[in-house]
Amino acid sequence: MQIVLPPEVEALVQRQITSGKYQNAIAVILAGIKLLEQQEKIYQGDKGPRGQGE
Image 1 (cartoon, one colour):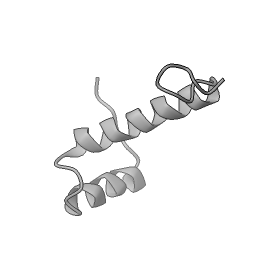
Image 2 (cartoon, one colour):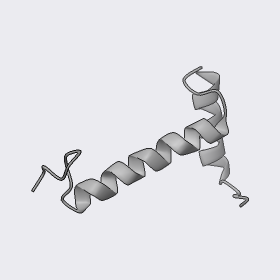
Image 3 (cartoon, helix red, strand yellow):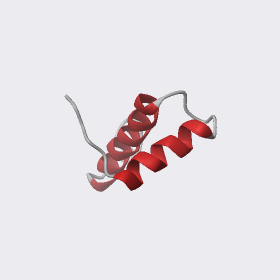
């Protein structure tokens, strides 16, 4: 899969790499995907590791 990022998103990714927080663009994207997954779980009511948020 190839993804074309808007310039402002590409700049954000580059800033994260330049800051030393991430080694490459893939690491930045994966961090964002993990946050998205966490957010989805919260919206679904699964706030704990075993669904303890009910």
